[in-house]
Image (cartoon, rainbow, N blue to C red; front, top):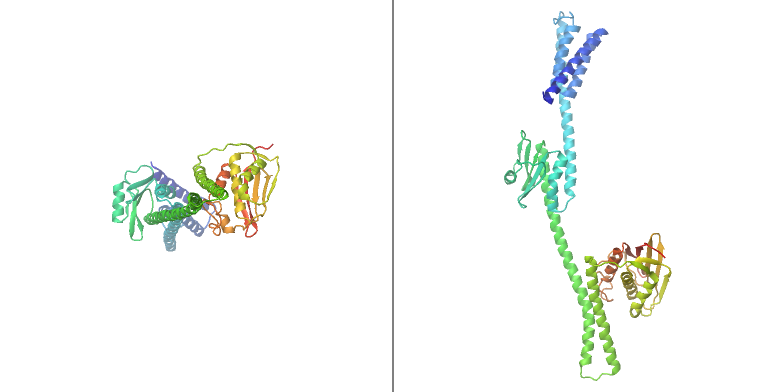
Amino acid sequence: MNKSAIRVVYRSLVCGMIVVAVVYAYRAFHVNPTSVALTFLLAVLIISATWGLLYSLVLAIAATALFNYYFLPPTGTFTIADRQNWIALLVFLVTALIASQLSDRARKQKDEAVGRRIELERLYNFSQQLLAADNVLQLLNSIPGYVVDSFGVSSAAVYLPDKANVYRAGATAPELDTEQLHLVAARGESTIDRERGISLTPLRMGVKTVGAVGVIGTVSSQTMNAVGSLIAIAVERASAVESLSRSEAARESEKLRSAILDSITHEFRTPLTSIKASVTSLMSPIDLSEDDRRDLMAVINEESDRLNRLVGEAAEMARLESHEFQLDIQPQRVLELVHAAIADLKQALGKHPIDIRVSPEITVEMDGERVEEVLVQLLENAAKYSPPESPIRVTAEFKGQNLEVSVSDQGIGIDDMEQALIFDKFYRGKNQRYRVQGTGMGLAIARAIIEAHGGRIGVTSQLDRGSVFYFFLPRQRTK
């Protein structure tokens, strides 16, 4: 016997046992017929609400027969002597039947309401999963799995004519072939085969059909229509987001290209113009004094160094971004790196007094050459954006497991909005980009070096109060 037949036999036996138990108990305690009838009605209502109309009818008929046999005179027979007892028995039977039907209807309505609530919860969870993806290809690969997980079907497939592919999840299902899905998408009509448990629904976006979805399992037609609409909306949304992202990327690329060209044009043209002017003066027939010649040669030398530094910064930025470099980690004295950076910037620092507050004992494992380059960038920035002869302070101290190094100035400061952008490649202050020389790569290089060490770099600043650039390096070993 299958499970369904066993369940029917079991429940029927329980109904019979209930009737026998009521009759035995009430005859033993000599309960009046009215109480017996009400008890049987209560049992009918409970069985109807629990197991359905069929079992409650079986219980009602059995209860009517035994109520007549044991409680209506003459007892022990199925005959009824009093006409009023005939009416009572008939009323009991009709009441039991009506009550069981009403209880069964209430049970079915409750089950339908619970089923609708579960379907709504599944649809909500399904819609939340669809909203998580912005990439069309990623979304299409994930949707069948979402359907299987959310609605408990054994297999799901999604077809889009534009992609010319069927995306699947779950058990292999030959019934959900490309031809069937294409036919549903072309017709725009759902196909449901309840005997085989196959549901095929078009993906509709308003009156537009963008594809089809098919499942193997039990899903209502209303739910399938909702699933089709949600998938269509999600696919169109993901396509729109992807197109918008491509447009935004192209726009940002164009802005970056313009910024790069503007920066390179300005920065490279200035030294080239100076070199060209100096060379032209040297080649002119005008007799120049020895001092003038030396001055022109110095200009050529300085501007050539500047060009070389610009090219070097570009190459350095490319290497850092591609991670084509290795750090040479060695114990380094921070004070020595500070003095080396100041020596490299002797001309750029001019008459700025440098206040060094670094203990000679501070030693940290780092790539000394790279960290010195960071210090050069920060000191040069402080000199560029500070009034002449204003002091620049360099400090270094341990804070917990990190070494903090800072370079502070008394310059023009940086507003809050620009502080978040100042370390981006090619970014230069909006009010300084044409007043102060630079490519906008120095701080980006500094950030890349510090992050390669596992540290971080930042800035605190107030307008007209100056800025403090700082970076943290992990404290690996001290001496």
